[in-house]
Amino acid sequence: MTDEEQGSRIVSASREVRAAAEVVFELIADPARQPRWDGNDNLADAAEGQRVRAVGAVFTTTLTRGGVRENHVVEFEEGRRIAWIPAEPGRTPPGHRWAWLLETVDASRTRVTHTYDWTRLTDEQRIPRARATTAAQLEASLSRLAALAEQR
Image (cartoon, rainbow, N blue to C red; front, side, top):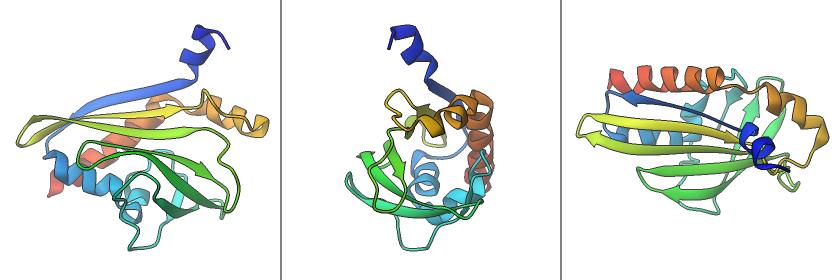
């Protein structure tokens, strides 16, 4: 894969949120809250009690189409960074990654960057959907996340 092809397989969006990093991070790290801000309208449900606390954690979500995903946490820094790779239950993750980076601007503002990276996606059947994931969808997630965080 060329550098250009690899770059086209990474989609990212950023925005400033008028809330402390801890507030924003809690909405991301608690899977039960994720369906409320998912800009892809892909998540239907996630059970309570799955709050992520470390690399290696696995949390489960139910998709709007009824499928279930096990999300394997591959990056974690409390209040700052979290990333996971989804997979069908009991299967090897096909290689796409969802990531969040939070940078404190000040006590009440946080710069949030959301990234979808499918450079390592191996499942050919998933490539059309991966290719269809745009910065606008990531921005929708950021907007919904900001609305929830800014209510607090």
